[in-house]
Amino acid sequence: MTDLLLAIVHHLLAFGIAAAITAELVLVRPGMQPSAVRLAARYDAAYGLLAIGLLVIGFLRVYFGAKGHEYYFHNHVFWTKLALFAVVGLLSIKPTLRFLRWQKALRADPGFAPEEVEIKAVRRRLMAEIHVFAFIPIAAAAMARGYGYVP
Image (cartoon, rainbow, N blue to C red):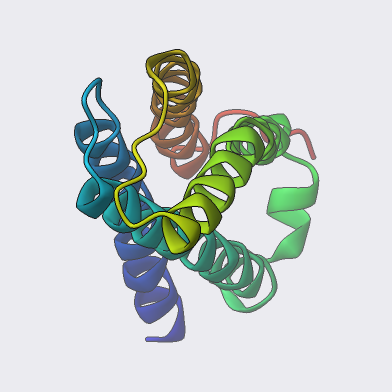
C-alpha cells in the first residue's frame, strides 16, 4: 500500500509541475498586464514547491517503494530521469529571477508591465522547460518496465 500511495502522490506532483509550467506559458505573453505578472509569479512559486515535493516523494519511493533502492541505483534510466529533472530546474532559474524582479517592480509601480524583450526571453526558457520535462515521463515509463537496469 505504501508503494501505491507514494506512486500516486509522485504522479500527481509531476502533473502539477506540468500544469504550473503550462500556466506560466499562458500568462507570460506580449502585452502582459500586472495581474498576469502576479499570477505567473504565484504559479512559479507553486512550481518550486511541487518540484521539492516531487524530489522528496521520489526519494521516498526509492527507499520505501516496492522495487527497492538497488533497482534505482543500478538503473541508468533513473539517472537520466534525474538529470532531465535537474536540467528543467536549471532552466527555471532565470524565469524565477525575472518573476521576482517583476514583482518588486510591481510593488514600486502598480502599473508595471514587463518589456517585450524580457517576456520573449522568459517564454523561450519556459518552452525549453516544458519540452525537456516531456522526456521525464518517457524515461519513467521505460524504467517502470525494467529498461536501464543493470544488476
